[in-house]
Length: 240
Length: 248
Image (cartoon, rainbow over all chains, first blue to last red; front, top):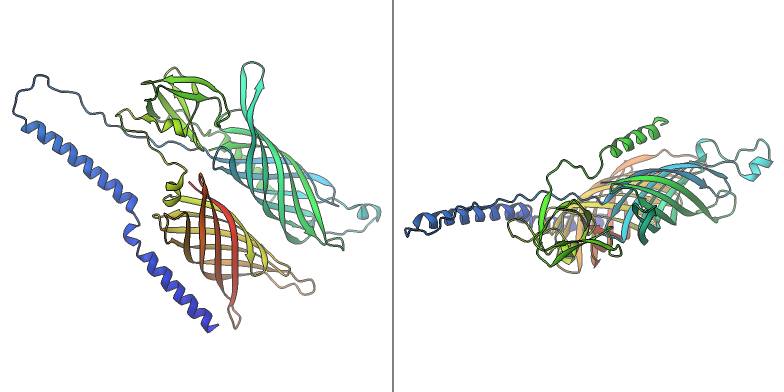
């Protein structure tokens, strides 16, 4: 343990020293901007002086004022946030309504990263239905809460046409990722994969239909097995 | 808890009422210097070109999505121009229109990054994500959150710390991290149910980031966590993880 702490302290010192070495550069972006402004001011002053010093009479007096361009910040609309509603088939526990929220960041026109959070509720197993009053899980344990971190690929981008006048951007996408599910009093590691279709009625609004399977290892019913929990959902998202 | 979906719905509706593209804002005007600027129907290379803007004509830049710019011509036609074509336009004073590109130079020097990882935390499966803000190309402030799922214990971790990239210009560049955090530990026991606890942690770590393409890079990382407990001995947990990240 002693050695561990010594190694920790040494590493800390090493990292801190190298980190501190860059302190002078911390705000170099700002410094660069300041230098550029100072340079521009100096140039302008020099230009004025050269005009004043010019004693020879001019044929044409250049009265054109230099235009000052302020570059407004260009807004990025890569983040997509929305809600969805659908049906979740929990293996052995019936199909029930599900609802959730998604947050995605579009990195390129092809790829995006998506985080999802949602809930559903497990129904009765066939054993419980046939067995009368037997309850495998308490009502609280039947809540099926999940989150995923997924990678998305816009597999088939295209356009959807409504009559002759409207064309909406659309994409068929694939999803794959990891996450976790909290069900039956235990939290399990999940792997998810799925596909979806996104159509954009406007630049900032999208409608999704997604089918996603969350796979995890369950030992709830005596034997350890991989369970598939397929969800189909429809949702709307806004880009900002 | 019942009101949570309702509140979320309200937030969502509020968001819907503030569209991403507001009309009352100052827009950047750029001028075409090439023979023409192609406008596509969508933000992607496969979308057809439906309009062109002639040389010396201007377009207003409405907003940007990934590597595409939504622009409006002087005649009011709106379309998507690619980043590659927009690089050849100029501002009203003749200076080239510049913007951040998702390329190798961006990998060396950028403001934000984010990513998701899969890994192992003290023998348990570990899912985590992080985001960071770079003060310069070498030093960054990092925030990360993780969830480990083990046979006997589950837990949630949250870290804040500094990352120092030693040679940011290298395609495969090592970095060191140091910081502190908290850990929410949820032991799993069938007979006696021990209570959940929250502990403070400190970590040192190292890793490698490797530039892939565009804005993507792979990040492999190791962190050694010291968990400060009320017991006689502090605990230690090693975190190994590998994931995809991107900068923006």
